[in-house]
Length: 479
Image (tube, rainbow, N blue to C red; front, side, top):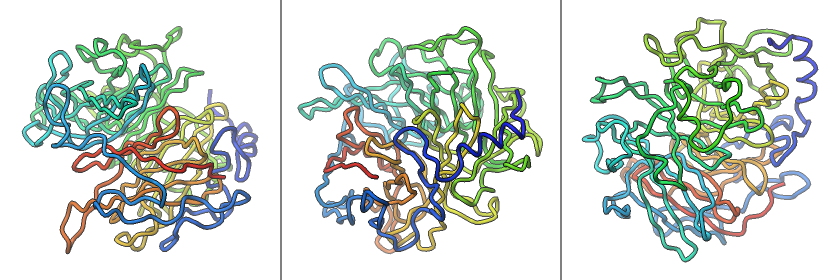
């Protein structure tokens, strides 16, 4: 049922700036004038009644990998081309989205995507084609499962192989991983032998469940980035990182009577349920064509949902099936996390699309009110080669210590950074691994940011060459 203007006026009044939502995030970014960090901001300014935000300045790493605040330390869990899988092959490269699950006898199970695009011959360390776990033998991507034991021992094995450009993905409430292909390649394109652009389910607890991988075609074929599950309603929300035109934020509504659980998504018919895209409007009832139009934190949009005509994109990409005025798009829709009864998701930097150029947004979708609220807005980073400001948010997670932790995929220096309930940002880590030259330094993006089930360890990846890190230290509540 469409959301009427009267309904929206009531709901936007209830979710506007300065009104706390339930849960750990609260009024993230809705304080007047909250605009993330500006160049030169160390992130240690006042964060309200709780005192200073963050953990202090970052200390350069003598080993040239990860700068952290004083008192924190890191450990390398996997490193492409150095650590090995149980089968003897090297850990695949290009680490991306990651989830952490509680395994048996104190083991932490980490499912790690590998964003490897195109044919296998293009990569030194593709995901090995493990017997029974291969979708398309021509594709280089997939994901691995990393077992971190209490005594520090690590084991790694393939969860799925033969997929392409596995990006952010997302975990499920029933303990599995949804790995997402950020690709639209069809069989015969770029060396592929099967169509790509799908979501696959991987079970870190049961290797047998991963055999004979089958795409969940009901969730559509497009450049998937991330996915979350609304356990109460059964809906799945998905982001698309694409341009020309910009991608979409999707909702999948399950068929009547469907019940979620381990492996049940792969039993769905290809046309099961309904895949939908949003149509947003402001408090005056005016249609909003792109989320980058919002320039103030606390902005609230009402959301209607429009059915996707052809979710498998047989003749035209899904995002191109809608004419101007039919749906609301977003610039670089990327990481997503379910918390506080809704979905937090990232729109990355925008220039021409936005009345005010910016370096990234974080939105919150409230399914109960059917509203989108802008929670974080990052100002343009004028000096990306200098340490200080943040730009290009990508993977995100909700912190057990309050607020968000965001992985940076911007220009120049790359960080993990936090955002408090009041919109204050602060550094957590900096990538010190220069993969360029001394004259022209280059630093890979951070990915796969996620806390361990007990909240004591923050896992994150440096995408290139592919390093998984475990960060520990004196975590504390960020008020």
